[in-house]
Amino acid sequence: MIKATLRSVVFPGGNELLAFAWTGRGGLMARDPALCLSARLDRLKVAHPADDAIRSAASKAISTADDTNTDLQRIAVARFHNGRKQGDGGIRIVNARPATGIFGSQIGPSRSSGSYFYGLAIAGTARAVVRRTGRDPFRAAVAIRHGLFAFDAPAGAGLLTLRYLTARGKVLAVQRYRPNGAPA
Image (tube, rainbow, N blue to C red; front, side, top):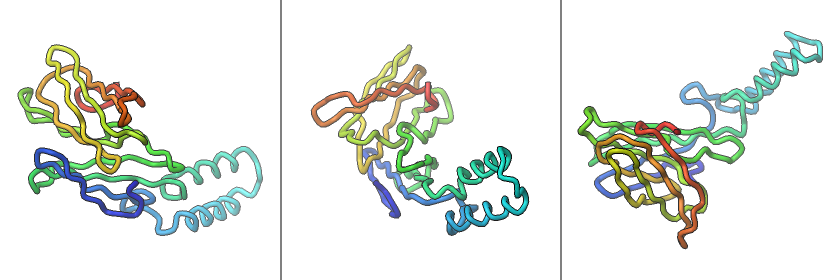
């Protein structure tokens, strides 16, 4: 999808997502996760020479840490509206299996303000539909571009339901979210 690239994805309404992927954990990421892993495991053998449950558990913890896991990537997204940065978010990708769904949102400063949500669509999604139930219902088509989606939601309360659809309209998955974008 985004592997080793910086990509600008433009959506309706003056919204743009600047997306990029990287390995490790932000500014603390290891330059070479495999070398870091090897060095830490070597230190563990010196510090705890016995090949027992303690060393096994420590080895597993070291191997799955963000900065030594060679199968970990992150996708980071910065949101811009009419050229001005509005926020950012990101998700982890482990073993080439990214979490899908909403991973970023900007909630307006008051109850009368709308909200903006963005995230990663399920593989094979051609389009999506978002619906809010409750006292302030709404429904909207959601654009999918380069595997990413973004949409505005008018002010209101109620659960959001996001349906991922193929080009022929087959439902791939349904995800539910609280008004702040957290999974329901």
